[in-house]
Image (tube, rainbow, N blue to C red; front, side, top):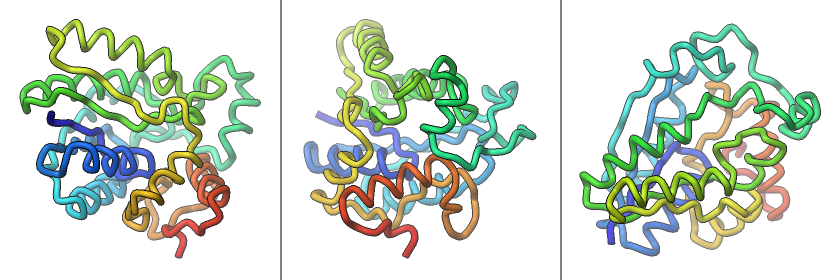
Amino acid sequence: MKALVLSSGGVDSTTALALAVEQYGRENVVALSISYGQKHDKEISSAKAVAQHYGVEQLFLDLTDIFQYSDCSLLRQSDEDIPLESYAEQIEETGGETPVSTYVPFRNGLFLSCAASIALSKDCGVLIYGAHADDAAGFAYPDCSPAFHQAMDAAVYEGSGHQLRIEAPFVRWTKAQVVKKGLELGVPYELTWSCYQGGDKPCGQCGTCLDRAKAFAENGVPDPALQ
């Protein structure tokens, strides 16, 4: 069995990559890193470092043009500021009825659809991504939810002639549980990048920075990105 893993260079996708390497062997794992018009390239740089660490084949795809019409605050054409507050605070502001401002329109749906074509072309039988429960909470990122995963898996399974399944091993886990598993696997979290800003050091204030810091703190270890 070969596996293709969506690899963004962040905590969750890197843990998913480590899990795939453990399960299938590095020679049977392909990492796919996707550009989507984000305001910085730190994610891709980190994804390259992670793939090199694990010695897996890495592919790249640029979907920037598809998101050119979006005003999502993560994208380079947007004038919107990236919120410097926790996801819980952002969810409270939206009432849990609409996605947060850093939700890129149907990003995971597009990523998984494109990745499915590549996975089939690379003779992979499984496609893995690192969605987790914290991101799906309060409708913040609806394309990280169990319902979304089940629907996409069913569609890809049927559309591939039963050749490909989608796995989201952390879809019902908190980020703290993801980090716990990663620590057990010896994941090189010092190579990863989560911050929505593109500086030399994480800002420590955006939603993903706060979420990440909390996950490491709950495991009683410092975040190596801040060392």
